[in-house]
Each structure stands twice: as C-alpha cells, then as structure tokens.
Length: 322
Image (cartoon, rainbow, N blue to C red; front, side, top):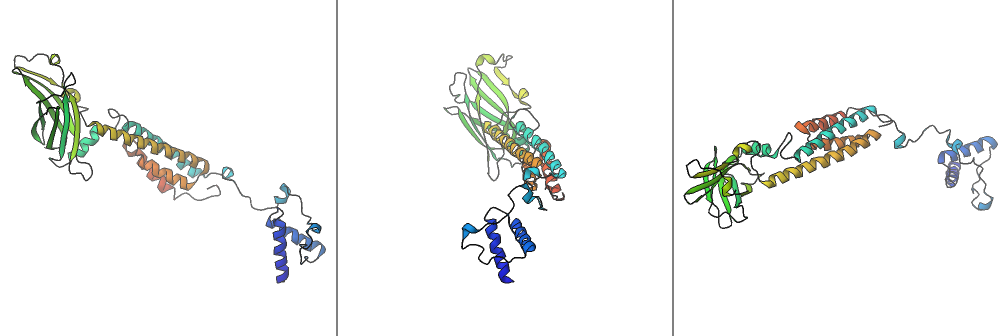
C-alpha cells in the first residue's frame, strides 16, 4: 500500500511537470485505475521516456471547470460597502486638511494666523524671556545711527536702547506679547519719531529666551506733516496694525512651512483613501485615517474624522471582498 502511494506521488509529480495541476493529475490517476484496474507502472516509464504517453485532456477551460474554488483577483472582489463609506469619509477629512494647509499658507487671512498663534503662546510665557533685535534704515538706505528705541507694554513696562553706527539695536529682558515700539531722533530742537505695534516671540520649546528680529525703515522728514507747534513730528502706525502687528518674518516662514506639510499630508491621505475606495483594504483605511488626523483641518475637524474612522475600522465585519 505504501509502495503504491509512493508511486502515485511520483506519477503526480511527473504529470504536474507537464503543465497540469496536482488536482488534475490525481483525478486522472484515479480515473485510469477505476476504468481498467491496471496497476501503476513501478518504473513510471522513466526508463524509456520516448514511449511514455500520458493521455490527459487538452489544457483548456473545461479542465478547470469542475474546480469548486475560484481565486479572485483584487479587481474582481466585491468591496465591502462599509469600508468604502469610511474611505469616502476620509476623503472629506483630506479636503479639510488641505484647506487647513492653504489657511496656513496665507498668514494675513483665514481662520488661524501666526499672530494669533504667537499671542496665544506668549500669554503664559514668563516675564523677561524675550529678546528683541533688529535695525533701522533711513530713506536713502543709510543706517539710522543714535536713534532712540523704546519698547513699552502693559506687562513689561518701558525699555530703552540706542542704535549703533550700523543702525542695529538689541534689547533683552523683555516680556513676550504685544508691545509698542517707538523710534525717535532729535534734530535741531525738533523730535521726529514713529510708533509700531509689534508682537514679541515667547521662548520656543525648552529654550530660555524667545528671539524677535525686525528690520524697520524710518520715513522721510516730509512725510511727518505738522508738529502743531510742539516741535514733535510723529507718525503713529499702531491704529492700522491693530489686527496684524509686526512680527518676526521668520515666524511667518515657519508658519508657511507647516502649511506645506499639512497640504502634503492631505494629498497623501487622499491617494490612500482613493485606493481604499477601490479595494476596501483595511490597512489603507487605517493608514489614511492617521494621515487625516495629523492634517488637523479647520477647527480640528480632520482630527475628529481621522479618529472616528480609525475606531470604526475595527467594527466592520470581514467578507469575501474585504
């Protein structure tokens, strides 16, 4: 019995080597034994391969018609409708994340602006933890030397400094947040000055100090108007800077970089979501939900969508197309 079994296994291997499936080979051997009752040749005809003739049906669709199982290609599988619904919801989250990135790329418009972000961070920042530096340039491009710099704020009081020969200045021990910057010079018993509303950066992360660098232009004398008999010529820019005070340009640059990051995450999440719509693959859905979560979205809408989809993905039953 064991010898016959071994012979059958060898015979099956020989038939499979001719391009047929193992199932077809076993069916053929069984059919031959049932019809003529002959024993299997122990040599399998290997001694004289030219005389070996195995009469099997031609390889065509009928050979595999009796098979009870069918292997479906990914494109032929039925997609789980619940999984497809989650993928569509993720696309909505990706759109929200994309809009959030566009918002970050527009520092002076939109829902969130760098000014509000800096101000919110400076609210709880420690006092005397900000450093302000920059330069003052005259209308002809020359440095404004020996100009008085005054920083005044409700939390930090007044701080004074003077520009050097290159028009540069540096002020320490300032309090982060909103402040008023005064720049003035006395010439021929007349005082010329300007006022700006600025926003001093708080310390970032574990840094002990926050740095704010702003370069300013001092206007021409004919732009100051009249002194009303006081000998003081002054231009106050603060009313027009109530909504958008002056900030460090690098802060706006970092803000834009974050915006590009949100846009990239949203686009990658969209690609995975589209693939998930076509395949219903849970790995794609969960990966896309993580990307959607980190794209934030306006008012954290994408965070909510990504988290909800990730949790729901564990509640969907499996089926043939999943």
